[in-house]
Amino acid sequence: MKQKQILHNTRARDDAMKGGERREKAGAFRRQHRDDAGDGLCRCRHGGVPEPDRGDDVYERTRAVFGNLAEQTVERETAEPTVSPTKTPFFEATAEPTVEPTPTATPDQSPKTITIAAAGTIYAPKAVRESAQEGMDHYDFTTTFEGLSGALAGADLSVVTLETTLAGREKGYGNYNTSPQLLDALRAVGVNFVSLATERALDKGYDGLDITASELTSRSMGYAGVYPDGVNTGAAMLNVGGVQVAVLAYAYGLSDEGRERTKGDSRGVVALMETQRVTRDIAQARVDGANIVVVLPHWGTKNRAQTPDTVHAMAKRMAQAGADVILGAHPNVVQGVERISTVRSDGLTYETVVCYSLGCLLTDARDSENTAGMAVRLEMTYDPAVRRVWPGALEVTPLYIARQREDSGIVYRVVNAQDEQALEKLTLSEQAAAAQAAERA
Image 1 (cartoon, rainbow, N blue to C red):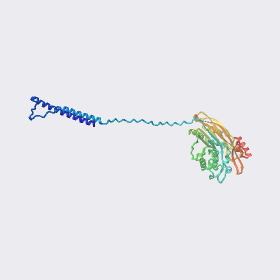
Image 2: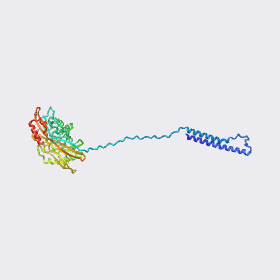
Image 3: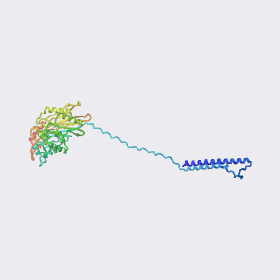
Image 4: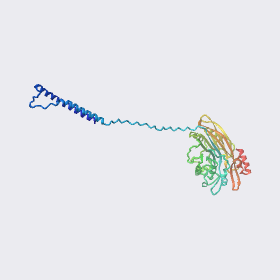
């Protein structure tokens, strides 16, 4: 707007100056005429006397006009409000919260110790089963195992071998098939894992094995040695206080009845003790992350206290392959305990604890060697810093399977042969037999 006003003023000034120039020329012309006559009068053709000359003050009047215009322009410019230039606002950056990186958890490299407990073979033929019967199809084996006095309780892994199926009345009771309620009494004394790899695993066919596995699973008890789906899925892997424990179990073969019912185990559900398979499974368990490997072999010769050379050789092969603990069963008598040192594939020497036979935990047999068993308790320490395991002291508890007549009839009791309180419930003759059992262990 101000620029347009200045342009207008400039044009007006130019026009006024031009007009002034024309008037100045006209005045000069008239003066010339007067001067030529000498009388100051104009000798024009129209013959009249001219109007008084007013062109002499045009310049002064024009300058006055432009002065006024300039003053008005200044007044208007002064009157217009001064607009300060807009300042760009300064925004203070708000400090964003510092996100601290989540620290990576440092693996615990301190040594870890676990406890393994185990006892021998269980089977409950008619005499044993009837001693626990309380109704048409109700059995309570609590009394049978209450005298164990904590020999199996409180361990991280507490193992027994079931040389019987648990298919119940549905599959017909017999020497090698009993009530699944047996598991409730075992669970009550601390047992949480069983080996099913025995020659009797398929005596009631595949259905009997499936029922047995389901009864264990429903009680949150683990098992090894059989693969009901017929697929070898390797070791049962347990996480015990941050230590990965692999458990494998093997049977030397199947009974005639089991082979007949399953056409020689056409599905391959029972893990058989073949050297190549055993060593391969142990090695694979290590590859799968096992820190400790436990093997439960069903081997040896029944009622023989002497361990065969073939069993010794197999134990050594297992140890070389990576077994840390070997807990044997099947002979139904107690055999020796040994620590063997072997050099493994990494060139280092390791120690393996071997219990060749834990004897019986429950049976109706009354021969002195059959009524004496043992429970073992072993601490194993794994050091993640060097990825090695060391076996600790082995605690052995001698067990005795007592049979005596009480008010309710014939009762079977498995007792700690060194527990005086448990022995007080036995007759004098049974106490004497328990003392002999303690010597065998």
